[in-house]
Length: 67
Image (cartoon, rainbow, N blue to C red; front, side, top):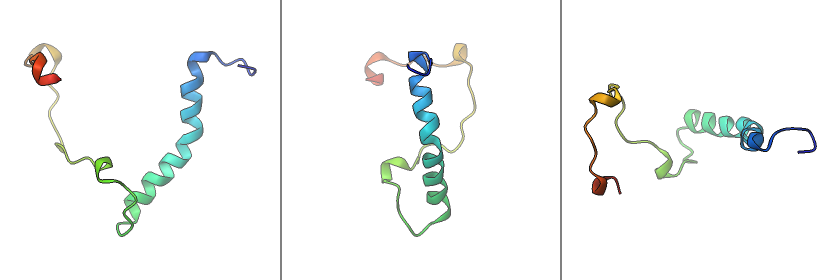
């Protein structure tokens, strides 16, 4: 606040400061296949590619299935 940034910018400023470390960790995870620094829940195993379906053409999801 002393520097004049609006309060709404605080999360953005926090992320900007952390970005170099996050990117370095991500690059290390990609380049060093022997070192397992990622937890299993951090590795995406879902669909590799899905076609985009516009919102009006999507099927509605039942409320009980979403929870």
